[in-house]
Length: 340
Image 1 (cartoon, helix red, strand yellow):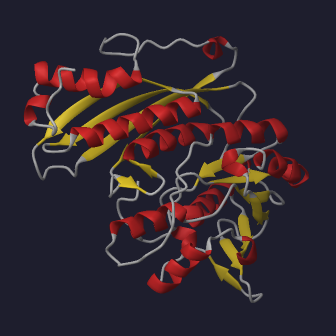
Image 2: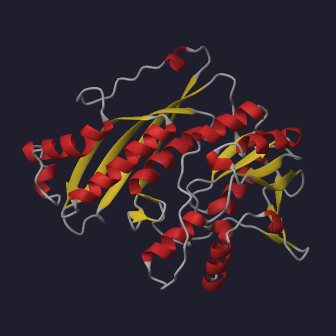
Image 3: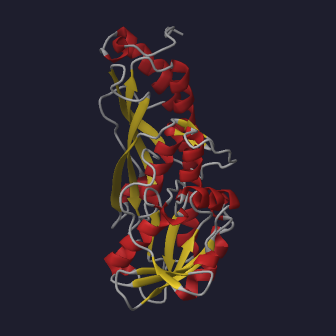
């Protein structure tokens, strides 16, 4: 072991021996890329299938705190990118990872983040094949920022789009709502709240494959990250020109999350998730989709929460527990900054 520094210094971003040692011992020794070229060279049998398409996505992660109950910035970076590919019907294959490091950040923290990324990538069946590091001065970043990009392959028979959603389709979620946003809020300690809430941060690739096999008529899927389920529903309703009605009594919420929202005046429909997706399935395939989802770790708590209606194009409503109805608008502003 040649890296003896306990904290990152500006020398680790200078292009010399210190930078080489940091990259080798913290990153490439864990990610195991094929060589040390300036680019990854990608090959997969899926690319040669007639009609197959590449899926490509990118995202940056600035979550505060960088470690939280249920995950860390590395895990969320891998899961978030994998999920963006998976909900479009893509099979995630390769990721890149770029790190902005603040001078003074602990090397031990970096090692934990990188180990978390490698474990999550293995679980999702993807490889981290290329990346980059930059070091900035104290106060110019907040410990660690991560940017990931992902490449996957969409088989020729798949075409998941919001525009495909039709009246009568069933709206399904794979688990409880708002856990990530609530976990981050509790972890910050700003509100002096004591709550045993763990982020739902998880990869959804295996879940999507199970659903597509069981319900080939699946119209569309979205992961409900920033803006929560409410924002996803509004995006789909607008894109498809349909109305969507959900049932308040069907929403899967933990008592802890519901209680926190009541205390702080938050709406759990707008809380961020990092392992929850929203599916739109034809009515005659809804039960098959639910059964398949419940066989997976990420989908064991899957439930139907509403339906698509032909009227009020672009409008999302919720039938309340008291039998009334209210409009569920898009999120205005930001309930919680830096949650992913």
